[in-house]
Length: 96
Image 1 (cartoon, rainbow, N blue to C red):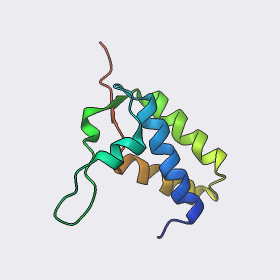
Image 2 (cartoon, rainbow, N blue to C red; image 1 turned 120 degrees about the horizontal axis):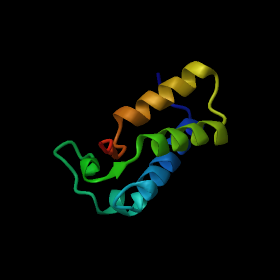
Image 3 (cartoon, rainbow, N blue to C red; image 1 turned 30 degrees about the vertical axis):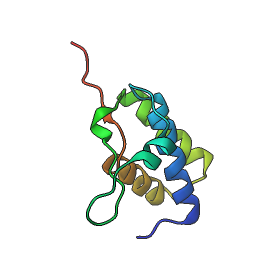
């Protein structure tokens, strides 16, 4: 299923907020600009070098869904999965 223009805009904004809230904090637009390209011409971002608290991640994604009015629920769930499987920062390991 193809994303709508609104969902694409939501995705880019979500990445911006996730990387800003990550450790180390980063400007996603700058990361994308400076990222090397692979053999297929795709930008490669080292998303594993960035960590975010899972609760913060969930809050940001849910805020974006509300802000961009991604509906119905199945579209919101697709958005959540796309963000989780995309180039989002990894989750911090819980402290013991």
